[in-house]
Image (cartoon, rainbow, N blue to C red; front, side, top):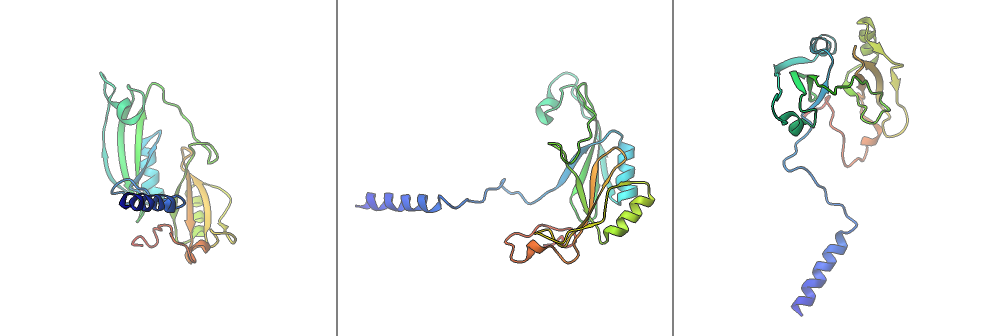
Length: 199
């Protein structure tokens, strides 16, 4: 009788949880630390992020290479003869960090993905006023796209956006949502925001 009761309890537990997804996580995961980007010219990239965007340089290190073995391939998944000439870390306001890489490699490709390309990406910076950001970027000769664009419908209503590009083509965005976004009302999970980094 005890075995039947134990099996029934186990079956009920398994069937009861079948429709419920358990949250999984990398053990100890706390949040986004940095985004790494390979750039064609380290000085140009550091000058852009510090002199135009307003980030602060924290540190530089390198080079890294392995002339005899496969360390670079084993650790980073790159050509075994790839060389990281320099890495520079920058901190941008109260957001996460950006890690800039200057690589050389026998099989290096010079690709600038569009946002629509698989593997394409952009980095968004929260600003207080997107129109002021556009005027500033335009005055500095930075390529900006159409905007500012206010979003007035759907879950993202309340935000204003503007896309722009670094001199080497990296896609960037200025975003603002001073009164929050529509989805936040009743949301179980609210996105982290650099305007309230403690939340």
